Image (cartoon, rainbow, N blue to C red; front, side):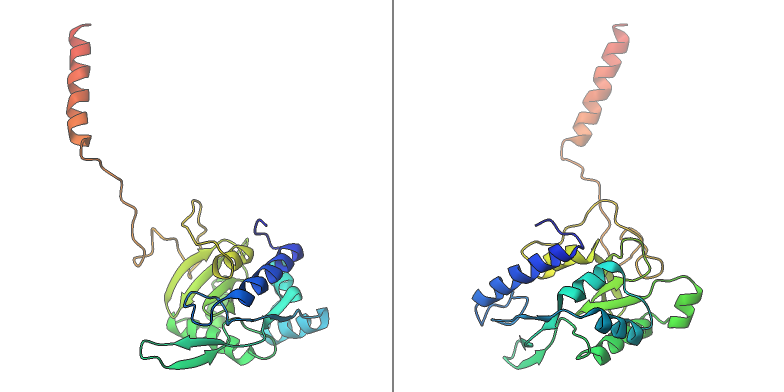
Length: 225
């Protein structure tokens, strides 16, 4: 199903991911969730309103549809480091279970970028919200693009919430696309971001030779009138 921010898409994603996680191997390092994971039931309208009140702003409709359909996972993901040490973590945030982590993530980004919510509001900078891990939705931006925000290391990750669901939870991969949006302060665009590689014009090995030959042909045509 093509990614869109409708309830139907998130219902489809819910069924698709649960079927995938039911078959995932326990030692699969690329799994997006622990084996056998299932989504917790979505939030009611009353619970959504309480969530919004806790955050201090209204959710965009895509985020509301996401939480109407599912609300985090029923079990944590098991992380393993190079030394074989393991620890549990809930990657996809659930309300009210992870409300403190959500606030902590937002505060970390503000602190890392040396800005405060008050300054951001005065400058017209979008509010941010972590849906899972360090994938943040731009609350006040048109289309609500998704950024990957790890401290002050920030890149555009997807155009929409539905698209990032397919990238992180489904079977697709993120690719750079034309027309990437600029997000005031948070993401000025990949060409303006010194951390992003600049695209270089490809120059073939025969380019110089072809340029010389083209000049010779033009001179010959002029000589022939």
